Length: 299
Ligand code: UDP
Ligand code: MG
Image (cartoon, rainbow, N blue to C red; front, side, top):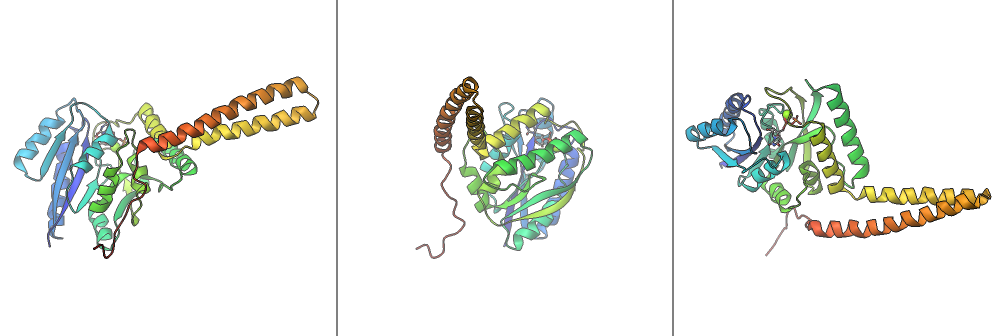
């Protein structure tokens, strides 16, 4: 039976990549059609200021399988991916960057994994070419820190590049938070996942749209979205002050110990307020309490 695959591609000023990207995507579509898979492309133009949109429109005229969602302005990479997922109706959905750092051909290997019964096949980077030492080190630290802080375990060296089933897609799009970190949510929703390894190439053309400031923003979104760990830090601070208070008290330094005690009271008060606001935060996010994979005998 013919199945459908949507490939979601966020586009922000990628005019140097689009021709090569389309060439490789159309080849992939040809290959996948031999596996009874009908592939469609969902390009989300995230407020490009170059001629990316015009180039895409040219392809859309020629190929029915090219769909374009054009944003009114730049909303950011993660939101562009969500819009793509929202507009995807296929049996499967893949997410890939436009700059060919993620090889489109790997989607074939991902599809094999899905056929084996996995619901998520995610790209895991072995090597990162062309990325400077700073980006490598910060990416390395970012994933390790996040895993220390978060309640769920994010696979390391993994971006948004992945192939998921419609069930997983529907679960991900149920999460409607504004500040979003898709990789985190993709793990949070669960489902049977498997890595597919690849070497990360350099950008085909153009420059990264993730300067340090954007990376920091993403890191903060990830930490605050996936955990309330920063609030626990305040508890640690309070404990340290309390121990200092006791130590100075025992040492007979009454004035300093009194200062420590006042400090302790203040910090603990902040921590309590923090815990309440953490709960309010969790409630207002309105995430579904659970995600169901399958119900058997649902009459
Ligand atoms: N992108 C986007 N909106 C933005 C920034 C980036 O849609 O505001 C797209 C971009 O066109 C690319 C993908 O997101 O397809 C990843 O961006 P980039 O390659 O610049 O990030 P990096 O690989 O350097 O982390
Ligand atoms: Mg890139």
